[in-house]
Length: 91
Image 1 (cartoon, one colour):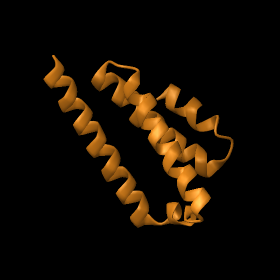
Image 2 (tube, rainbow, N blue to C red):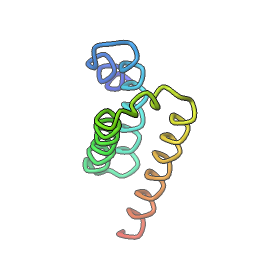
Image 3 (cartoon, rainbow, N blue to C red):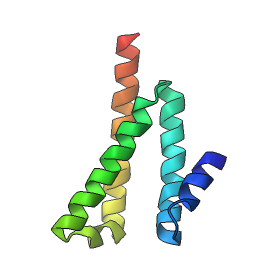
């Protein structure tokens, strides 16, 4: 929780701070689940890439919609489940 709070605060504004805090929790949980640093790095990179692509295409306003947020979190959970299953197969 402390690392997520620091991650959120480091983004510098309230909206990104809340998003950063929640993502900090998700990234930390991903690391704890997988035991690998690559998991949160890949997930964070995917999130940044999505924001970059939406910003450059002019669709960034979609981020503020509840439907986009729901889709984003469903994809995040799907990625976490996929990664966890992948880790179990490798062991």
